[in-house]
Structures are given as C-alpha cells and as structure tokens.
Amino acid sequence: MSELLAWVLSTGSFAAVVLLTALAAKSFAGDAARGRRRCPRCWHELGPLPGEGSGEDALQRSRHCSECGFVAALEKDTLRTRRRVGVGILSIVGVLAVVAAARIRSLDAGFWSMAPTRVLLLSAPFVDGSGYKSAQDELATRIGSMQLDDALLRDAVDLVVTGDGGRAPGSEAWSASYDSVWSALIRALPREDPLLLRFLEIPPNLSVSYLGAREGRSPLLVVDAFAWWPMGIESRLAIEFADGTVRRARFNPASGTNQLLVELPPDTGPGNRTRLVMSVRPLGTGDEAWREYPVVFTQIPEILGRAPKEPDAEPVDSPELHEAVRSVFYPDHSLTVWSDGSPRAGLQFNSVPTTAQELGSTLFGLRVEILENGVVRRTSRIWWSSDGRRSRARWLTPIEDIDALARLAAQDPSLDANWTVRITGDKDLADYARPPIAEMPVRTKFKYWSGSMELPLKVQRTGAPSPMRRWSLEQ
Image 1 (cartoon, rainbow, N blue to C red):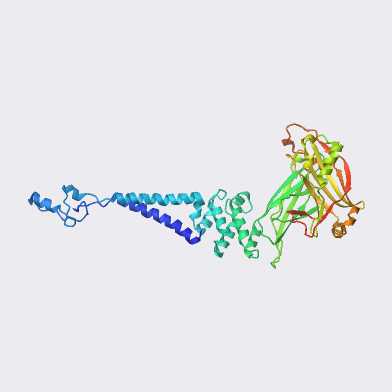
Image 2: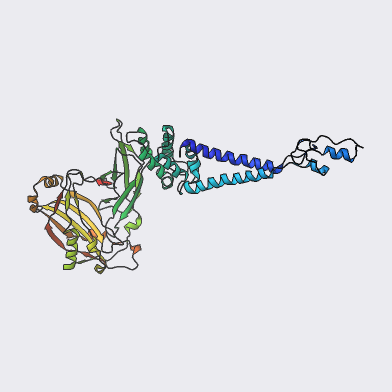
C-alpha cells in the first residue's frame, strides 16, 4: 500500500466514523421547538398564537401552514421536537459499513496495514512485534515492496539498530520483534549503501555449550553465533583458554549452519574460564578497523568435572560391521578437492548404512586419513551413533596438508593410485556419540566399532573454490 493511500484510509475511516456518529446523535436528539410553533410536516414556522378571545376559528387558522398547506390537528403538534430518524438510521448503517470494511481489511491484511509508515515506526517500540501481521511485519512488507523513501529507510535502520527499552539489540526478544524488519532492509538496501554498516552496531548472539563430558576427560567446546551483519565484512573469533593457548576461527554469518567444535586443552577442569572475543570489520570502505564486541566469559560447569562414571564402550568388529562402515564411503562417495579455499578438500560420506536397528547401541568414531604413498596428508575425525534419532554425524575441523592437496588437485588422475584412504575406529571419538545420560531411559552398555581398513582413494576434482562455511577453524 502506498503511503498516501495509507493516510487516506486511516484518517478517512476515522473521520467518517466520527462524522457519521455525530450526525446520528444529532438526528435522534432532534431540534427542540423551544417555544416556536412549527408545521409538523415541513417545519415552517407558524408564528405566535392569536390573542385571547380570538375564538376557535382564529386558532385553527393559526395552525394552517402557509408553506405546504397542512393544518395541524392539535396545538401540541406545533410544538413537537424535530427528529430525522431516517437520517439517523442511515448514519448508523454508514458507521457499521466503515467499521466492517476496516475489520475485513484488518483480517485480510492486518490492522496495521491501514497505518501510515510513520505511525508504524513510532508504534513499533511499544507493541509486540512477534505476532502475525504485527506493526513490524507490516513495516517489513513495505520495505520489501520498496515503498519507503530515503528518510523513512534511515529511520527504519535506526529503529532496528537501537531497539527499545525492553528489547536490547541482539537479544532474543529483539530478534523476535525486529528480525523481519532487519531481513527486509538487508534485501532492499544496495550492497554499497553505507546505511548497511550501521548493522555492525548490533552485537552477535553468541552461544556456548559442551559436548561429550566424561570422567577423566575434557569435553568439546561447541560455539555458534548469529549475527545481523551485512555482506562485505570480515569476522573472526578468538578463544583464549585458561592455560594461555588461543584458537582462532573465521565466521561467515551469511553461510551454512555448522557449529564450531573446539578441543579444550587436556588439563582444563572445573572453574577454568574461557574468554571469547568476537570481532568484525567492513571491507573496501577505507575504514577497516576491527570492531570488538563485549567479551564473553564462560565457565565450565562443575557438573562436567564430576560427570558420572560410565562403563567403557566395548570394542566390536565383524564382517557385517566392516562392510557397513565401508559402504559409508563407498562405492559412490569420494574426496572432493576444490581449486582454492579452506578446507581444501571435502570428504563425502553417508552414515545411513550404519544406523540400522539391528546394530543396537553401537557408536562410530572414525579417524579417516588420506595418504599419499603411505604419508598422511589429511585427517578427518567423525562420529555418530547407530541410533540415528539420537545422534547425527558431527566432526572436528580436518587437519590438512594444503600443499599436498593442491598437488592432488593439479596432478594427472592416472597418479591417483598413489593415494589411499585409511579408516580406523577410535574409542575417544566414539564417546562423543554417546547420547546425554538424561535421554537414556536405562543405563546402556555401548559398543564401538574398533576395526580398520585401507582402500583406494576416489578423487573428484572441481574448478570451483570450496563452499563458504559458517565456521572455519584456523590451523
């Protein structure tokens, strides 16, 4: 809806209801005689009563209307209050029609569809924006249909970046109210528009959790973030552990859904703090200083240090399990090597053959090594459970020899025979596939695949760079 039409509908509907209501009230209240003698048919004034002693004939003549010729039968008829009942009824019908039209439009496009954009911007901080057809939802629709001028767009960006008293930018409440407006602005504004850089003021929503806490070993640190930043930025995360070691990762807010899994230092224990610092900077603007967000401290919960003792998973192998693991990678899967990027290669696999019900509570933790003439050039660490409902496949950032993989990408395929893949069952990786104790109805005796195999490597080369990932851990 255009801005002009929104103003016409909102102010016009309000004015029509007020005027028609006033007209109905006046029509039913009527025009009292207040001593005036009037014709009850045309309401023409009849003049004063004749003087005393004038007789009945003179009185009757005084009730004769010289305008329409009507003769009032009784004197009290000349003093009636003038009411326009028909006009009053029509006025009420008009009010109902306007209200019904507004109601129908409200049901169809929402109540806020009749509000001007300026009213939407002023109202948004004071109304719930998480519902369907909210003020924020209507504002996002207008932004998406390019109905806002530059001034209104600036105000919309300011609204998103500032939030309001109860919804701080980047919080869950703020996201529920303003996410649709932010999304519409990101799509509507040109990539070179400097207004987009204002979104860098919104702090990222950083989440930290732990995976695989077991007695005697540290869990994995699981990090993810959601950021409301535009394209054309560079972002990174620094993870500083209590022992002074630092891990760094690149973050691409517009790509992928993978989480960042980081191994904690071996001596990490309860009470140790981990410091996370998220940084971002725009590229190609001349002002490429890093913007750091408030430092996030996370403490390993005490419960991780006193995780209940669980029986060790028993090693197991059989021809059937061996073939199931082999079919995860063969015959249709291979190592894809990209022309550029990091990681340089991607391992294709499908864990479905190992999630059959007859495999019971078997855990799969695999160390998959790519070898050139017996020398390890790439290592993947993957795990999942045979119970696919409880554990999806997850993995740590691969360890790569970039130079060797670049050579593999460029070499003649006839030399691929020098490359093999070695798949080895790993108990520590398999432990990460254990479901949380709270999700297990009874204590379960787990098994893990402990076999090993070495197979020819199938290589798939592509001239495209590696796909963008949400998180890329720096080696």
